[in-house]
Length: 251
Image 1 (cartoon, rainbow, N blue to C red):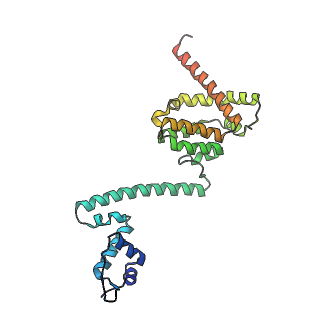
Image 2 (cartoon, rainbow, N blue to C red; image 1 turned 45 degrees about the horizontal axis):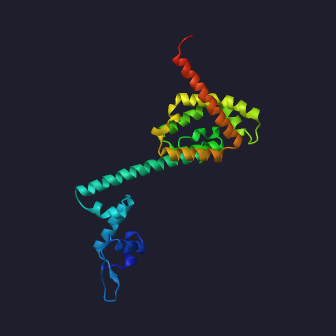
Image 3 (cartoon, rainbow, N blue to C red; image 1 turned 180 degrees about the vertical axis):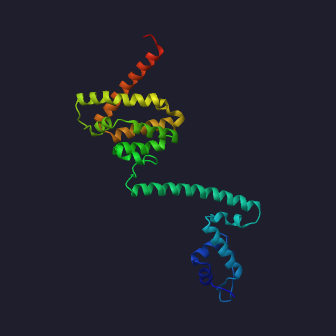
């Protein structure tokens, strides 16, 4: 019994183009041809096609099929490596499904990095965007600390900051900076790395600094940037005063 390309493709549950591709990449040997030039596929070709399909269903890449199909230790090692890759892919897909389910249930938005879903309602759109950018600049430990900072951030001060118009007057900026400074001071006190983030960076320090500055300039209006600058200066004074008090225990 011999089959044409179409016939063996149908038997193997694949397509003619796939059979031809396997020939091109060397996974399937060319069959003999009849005098009229038509190919004559044999049982060995069918078995080989079914084996290839079985391995492809298991996630084995085409360029590793020959290695896996061999008997012995090399086959086991190749399968172990493929299994490890599949485990990583499964974990990634499970995380993606969990996040999608959270979004469908209204508990998340796509504008925040993984792990910030429950905090999304607490973050303004610029804050959400900034957290997405931070997720590319800082490691997982730093992002966990940022989550904690958001949770501890007073809602009243955050809402005032988010609502601050670009033309806010001097008094409004100064008063908000005074109220916001303790938040920044607490973050510096609880998470000292924010002042020296070197160990938590996934990019170079220069890239991180430039990206953060550009992001803040683009995401926040002039009044908000002014408040951040003022609050940071005031927070620095708070920290220095606390350190002076600790160094000088005199009542």
